[in-house]
Image 1 (cartoon, rainbow, N blue to C red):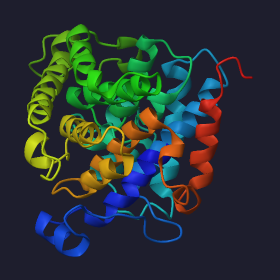
Image 2 (image 1 turned 90 degrees about the horizontal axis):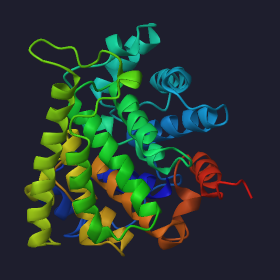
Image 3 (image 1 turned 90 degrees about the vertical axis):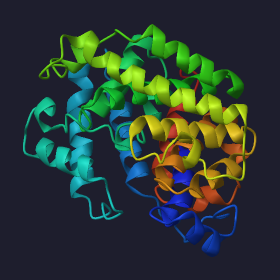
Amino acid sequence: MFGLAYGDALGAPTEFLTMEQIRTRFGDDGPARLDGDPALVTDDTQMAIAVALALLDALEDPPFTAALVEPMWRRRFVDWLGSPDNDRAPGQTCMRACRGLAAGKPWAEATEPDSKGCGANMRVAPVGLAPGLSDATRAAAAQLQAAMTHGHPTGLAASELTAFAVRWLADGMAPAALPAALRGRCHDQRAVYHGEWLGDLWRRPGVEGPAAFISRGWDECLAALDRLDAALARPDRACDPCEATGAGWVAEEALATGLLCFLLFPDEPVRAIRRGAASSGDSDSIACLAGAFAGAHLGLDAWPREWAARIEYASDLARIGAAWDRPLDGT
């Protein structure tokens, strides 16, 4: 949780800047330290916290189901919509969908059905971190939190992959094994539609059925992983990562480019998020995802110690981390 916030804060000042502008202002390697006290984050971290706080509430009242967690996510998203802190250039897809949720629409009517923006997966890391979920439930929950605002199948699939990457890294998977594991999940889940969680979201003109709907998302994620593999085969740690795996404005590119930044520096978390921040695309979301992966892999002690006291929402991040760092037996 702290890692994603650090990446978000480091990448926020470089979003919408060209590489030339970034190099002029911050040097070849991008921003090196958090600015401000507190160091401000964007809607990426705000919405990740919203997802996490609802999960904390839901997990205290099992069984964990769509019927339980959807209203909790709805409330947290609507609270974010109306918050005075929601002034960080939030994504318009999230804003429109959350206005629909605030108006009382069913989420499947409030969502932006054709959007696969990175807002679908920039906030999903808490679903990966939450303890005690089966793989099927984790997958369905990752997709539902995305679907409430971003209804495109690629947003759903990329969110699931992001959550599982976080979970696998937290469980000790070697970073080098991650791309193949994600590719395997794309193939294994290609026809799996979580109907109890997603309802009739799949129903679109020209779509033959739920498997045909969701398979498009997995295929687009596989194409993004192809680009990631090509970039890792010829790693260039000085190059704009967006040139290799995409600018990150859409979900599958945010996943691939965030992974690329992490995998270029798997044991150097600050360099990983600096690489994400020094990019020509959606730099805060890219660095946010890279930070989530690095934090899941290395833990809090790998980051500069003084950052934890200065990052915005530190108390929320600490509460979430403390809850989910406990052993599952509660001791």
